[in-house]
Length: 318
Image (cartoon, rainbow, N blue to C red):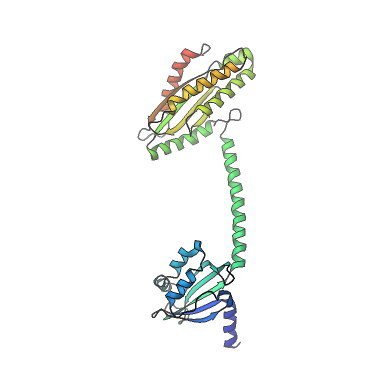
């Protein structure tokens, strides 16, 4: 094959070929296809670089500015035979096309030395668009799988009857609450709540009444709890609330008022022969150093809940 044929094949592969004199920072254009006729032809590399830069897609300009910096690529070419980057270039028709730009040493074969180097620009738009489309499709599939996993993960940690977390969720979110409190320096809110007279409701009015009471109390707890609270159903009629709040937050004080008011309105609006009520106790304190669980705070909140229960629940089990 003639040398001229090889040259023609190379020119057909690349849309632009320039030779850069490493020392003088001047260039010589070896090939310049019509698609890139909007790129300036000049003897100065810095002027040529500016001409390309204004035709690089805005999102790619920062990367191209580093890639095409003479000091940068000459330093890279001391370590490797060539460097390549993919950028969107505006062609003469005004559209941006994905192009591969390669800079390589030109004078010594298989060497990182040489006085000149080449910059080669090649159209890769069709391949790149196809790859990006496939990548987007793969990301969509992965997101769908991730979202489904999150749904199943949450379902596995939730109580079917109330929508609150179960004991699996309690352990998982206790660790998160502790971690958040440690990193933020905020206070931990822990509340224990217990339905009043559930056994009496079940024995006297049937389990449907008990289920109704559990559903109502859990619903109102979710509404009244401080923002960001994790609510766990720890037993048939027992609930645990956890949150990380600013030390001066008024939400812990406000929660009880909201909860009592909501249940009072519910009882007045229904003609049930029984009253749905709840007792609760809470603590709102900084996390103690070295704390790995909330058992101490839960125990204190539980004692306070029981103190309220002795006043409110005439059917309590001592």
